[in-house]
Amino acid sequence: MAGTEPTPGQTFEPGNEDEGLDDATAAGSVIAGAALPQDTLAARLEALLFVHSRPVVARRLAELVGLTSVIPVKQALELLQKRYEDMGSAFTLQELAQGYQLTTRPEHDELLRQLVREREAQKLSPATLEALAIIAYKQPLGRSELENIRGAGSDHLVRALLDRGLIKVAKRDGSKPGAPALYGTTAEFLRAFGLRSISELPSEGDLAAPNVDEEEAEIEEAEINAPDGDE
Image (cartoon, one colour):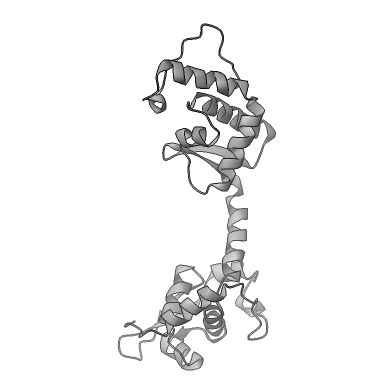
C-alpha cells in the first residue's frame, strides 16, 4: 500500500529495475526514501512528470530525486494516482512505454482538442493564412488559381493546410488535363475559427491575425518559393 514504511527486519527483494544494486544499497535507498516525507516525494515526482511530454521510466525519476531505488518512487506514484482518483482530478498517471506519464482523463479529450485547434489556427504563418483565406472565399479553388492570385508558388502551403485538416479536395476539375484538384475548407476549419458555416466568414481578409515566429516564417517563405512538384 502506498505510504507503507519498511519495518525493522523487512526483507528487501529487488525488482527488475533494481538489477545491479546489492541488497544493502537498494534497501538503504528504500529507507532513505521513507525518511523523505512521501508528500514531498510525490510532489517532486508530479512536478517532473508535469514538464515531460513523454513517459519517464521509474529509474530516471529515482535518479532525479536523488534515490538509487525505484521502490519509494513507485510507492509515491501510487499515492499520487490515488489522490487523483479520490479528488476526481482531470489528471491521471499512465504506465506507457515502460515509463510513467501524467495525462488528462479521456473524458476531457474533446475540450482539449478544441483548444489545440484554436492554437494551431493562430500559429499559421502569414503566407499560410493568406492561402487559407483565398481558398475559403474562392472555393472550390485549384492550386494554379491560388498561385495566380498570390503571385507565388503555393504547393507547400496547400500541403501544410491539408496536413492540418483545414482544407480538403472538394472535387476535381474534369475540364482540364489531369483533372486537377479543387480545394475547399473543412469542418475542422469551421471549428478552428469558431464558425458554424461558411456563411459566417468575416469580411474578406479579416481572418484572425497569425501568431508566428519570424524565423519560422522566413524558412517557410523560402520553402514555398522553391520549384513546385507536379500535382
